[in-house]
Structure formats: C-alpha cells, structure tokens
Image 1 (spheres, one colour):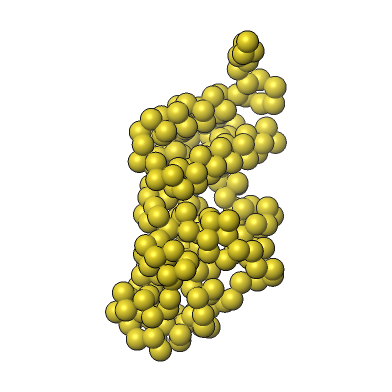
Image 2 (cartoon, rainbow, N blue to C red):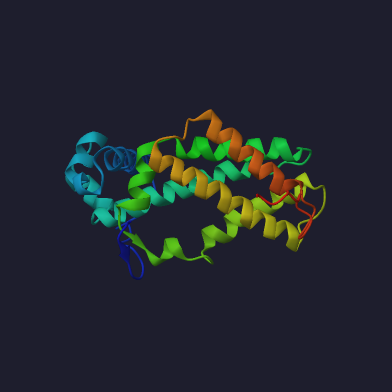
Amino acid sequence: MSTRIAGQQSQMRKHPRQARSRATVDAIVQAGARVLGDEGWGGFTTNKVADLAGVSIGSLYQYFPDKLSLVDAIRRRHLDDCLAAVRVCGTAGLSSAQLAASLVEAMVAAHSIHPRLHRVLLDEAPSSDEYRNPNSAFEIEYLRYYAEAVAACRKRPVNEDDRRTALIVSDAIDGVIHNAARRGTLADPAMQAELIQLVSLLLVSGGAGTYPRFPACD
C-alpha cells in the first residue's frame, strides 16, 4: 500500500503564469506520470523526469522543490481528468443503461491515459491525508456531478436518494476500475460490461428500498 504522510503534501514552489512556463510545467507533469508509471516509486527520480521532459533539472526545481510536490501535481492532474470525465456524463435524457455506459466508459478512459501509473499511485507513492479526506473539495465536487447525473437520468431535481445512489455508484465504479488498473484488466470488455450492468441496476432505483430484489442463494 502507498505510504501515508500526515498533513499537507509538499507544494509547488511557484505556479506558472505565462504560456511558456505553463507548457514547461505541463511537460514536466506528463513526463513525471510516465516515469512514475514505468519505473515505480523506487525508480522515480527528478533527473529522469527532467530528461524525459526535455528540461534542465534547474527548471524542474524552479517549480517542484522535491519528488513529493511532483507526485502531488500528478495526482491532481489525474483527479482533474476524473472530474472532466464525470462532467460530460451529466446530461438529461439518458436511460439508466446509457448513463451507466457513459460513466463507465468515461472513467475507464480517464484511467487508461497512463494505466500503469494508477497502480503506483494507489500502492506505492506517498500520499497525504488530503487525498483520504471524504470531505475534501474534490470529493464534494466529484459526488455533486454524480448526483446531478443520477437526478438527470431520473428526470427530477437532485434529492437525498440521488445523492445516496451517487455515492454508491461512484464507489462501485472507482473500486472496480482501480482494481482493474492494479490487475492490468482495464481494457477487458467483459469487466466493463459487468460494471455497466451493475451501475445500471443501481440507477434504475427510484430511491432507498426500491432496488430489484433477487432470490437468495441456496
């Protein structure tokens, strides 16, 4: 499992303001994601990242004082990708099956950018309490988009039942996809089809206690 670091993780030394500096930081973060995925935490060094990004080590340290601040930026980039994936799914008029497929396909795509990276982020790279906080700003926004998508599918304003379903759906999708990333099975169509079916069953409910009931196993 990943190492836990109490408190805030190391922050960027400065934030880019001009287009050229933003492009430099983007290249560093992309290179960092590739090196971290390919080499694991044990082989992750700022020199390797700088070489792959095509920048000097001094330019890297101008923005990132250490490896932890760079991993933090890589994590934030992944979280932004996940938010963007959920945003595009919150449109009205989708059936439960269509919304389930849209959510699963979007989240699989977000985790397929650097598939090996997510195993390292989950199991090896240090993380701070910020990324485990269920009331973080990211978590609140992430679940809000899920709730809006659920309510749109049910053709009504968001209510508590929709928020509850959103939490269950997001946990189901995140759990299955994260474990698929660990196992290297993100591209498995059977896994995706089973997950879509599961999410569709959760979405078809109109509220607590109205999920389909199945006979007990003997």
